[in-house]
Length: 99
Image 1 (cartoon, one colour):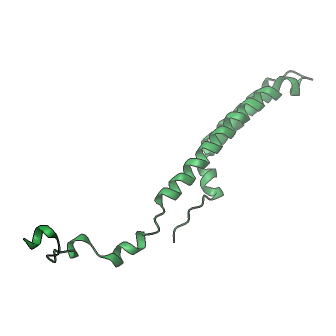
Image 2: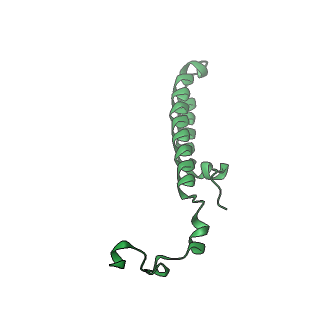
């Protein structure tokens, strides 16, 4: 049976570029801070970068879960058991075939 869950590895892979961008923005903010004003000069920039990252993370995690759930089909394994439509040859039981 297929899993309808999302793994941490899937989320990490989906977020690799976003994490790289977040890291670059944080490093840039830290390097631009003035001496003695690291917190004052960086706190808001880092908070905003983190907020964008958090929103992307949540949106991508939701999308991954939706994709997993849409791919999951409880009847997928039963299709072979039920046979194909080619086997459903007419048996003359339809009203239009009896006349």
